[in-house]
Image (cartoon, rainbow, N blue to C red; front, side, top):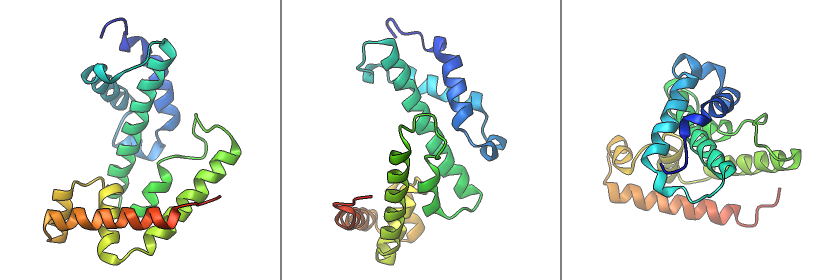
Amino acid sequence: MTGWNAEGYQGVLTQYVESRLPRWIRRYLGVSDVVQSVFFAASRSTDKFRGTTDAEYRGWLIRIAERKIIDSLRRYQLREGADPKRILLSARSPGQVDAATPDECVSSSELARALLESIDTLPAEVKSVVISRYAGDMTFAEIASQLDMPESTCQRRWLEGIKLLAARLNGFQP
């Protein structure tokens, strides 16, 4: 890691994760666990960092942290028995640190609502694959096993669902 000392960002990352990680999930996952996994992921993929400034590096680490938090929300909300579609809405909370403007928050919320409504209109066999893939964070092999179908059928249904969602949301104006 030439020129970049990830450990020098521990305080910034800890503060960021503390502000974003919901209290209910902390009984399963500590703030320090997320920060540690960010450093591990960053150390394994330093070749993917393309920035040149300190601020760009900090932003890159925060994006990794955001993905770790979202993945944890998906995993633990499913464990808690939450409706998988609602996980899509909870991945970005209204009070988040990087929310730019109130208008953008409203637009994001309206888009999420439109997406959920569009998911509800998908054919049942397609909807189950799309929800399992994104909200359940499952691989095609896992979905195929769960739904007792060939993996290729699973992939085809997922692609069909994505195309249908794109068509329904094309031109969405909040």
